[in-house]
Length: 193
Image 1 (cartoon, rainbow, N blue to C red):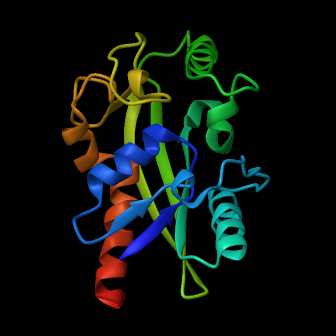
Image 2 (tube, rainbow, N blue to C red):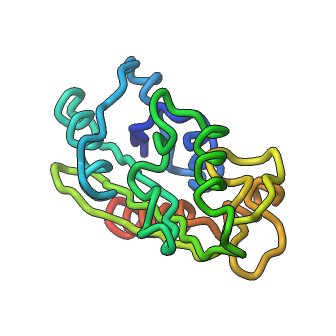
């Protein structure tokens, strides 16, 4: 089975391809000849993910899925949330986003945080959502070179290293995105294999 992952984020694409089992081939937007940016104008993870799947499904008449993910810090009223990728403004910049978040948290010790993902799957003209969430806290120091986004400052519960320090193999077992992807795979296997 072939399905399009509607993202221009190459790090996300690589991560999802590592999680998805053999038998499901993930095509990128580049693979189908789409190179534009789809504007995320929604007010929730669900809306932003669905905007991407509807756009690609309508334009190419193809099954696809997309995600919208964010880091939520309760002591900042859930910020950066759906604005995580552009928290420090545009264009997107992981280093500046981390710097801005750490500045806002400089007086906090081990602030609680959640990584969230919502996946929108458009298949057979039907739309289904899958969610993933992981709890952790924000590190005072930026550590590690693995992953992307806020990974170098997010320490998941039960670990003493950031997502930036742990291997992709471990991250892909416990992350918010892997939780949602496993639900998506289970749905596809149950209904289309």
